[in-house]
Image 1 (cartoon, rainbow, N blue to C red):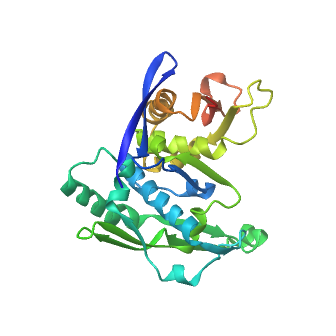
Image 2: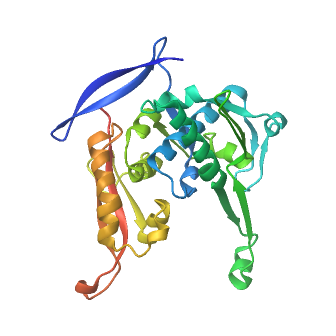
Image 3: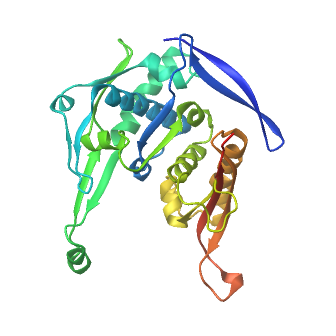
Length: 303
């Protein structure tokens, strides 16, 4: 399948920005990807920007496969158990390298691409797990600390075939649930997601997408204006910065928050006027106030 890139110009906050829209030479392809909001509960250990691109491209084609072939039969939403069609427990899903490259036009060296896919599958995908904690009884947990932890790998089996230039995957049933848009879900354009160069921008973008259809700010004149609050530790964990808890607030802002917001404001065609503010812990001594979290403010684009 071959694709052409069409270039458009947008004027965003005093700057012209280029947008690249990928289209099939035969027809316009649907580049939107939808999945459960629970995908944002996954921690992606040491993922690079390219790792995110490859992972979500794989998810895009797995989701497409599910839509075209049926997929999940029954979902017990309040339990970890997910029933799927029997054939899905045996069949592999195949993603060709040519499909992987659809959203990765910058990859031109085939040997280097083979190596990237191998290392990504071997060192990143193989360590990607879904953690789910289920308490049988909240009182029992509070009193005795009892609970149940189930850990699943996102992909049960990964086969990297450089000879046939395909990835063969078996997906965990719970991963099938995440990649099927039931109840609460987010949707974003793969071209837009892959266009961001900073891995933290991609992560913040997913967070905004999760809440873009939420309730507008109280008293806001603009119904498209939203806000999200996350405490500092929760935010560091979300962006996979948990190994750097020695970061002070200034480092966290300088190295993650500010560059991400800048790239979103310049390059996103989903959001505008993205900003943030510190939220301080209650303390009568204003000079010793501790930052307990951040509020992210953004507007949806309707143009």
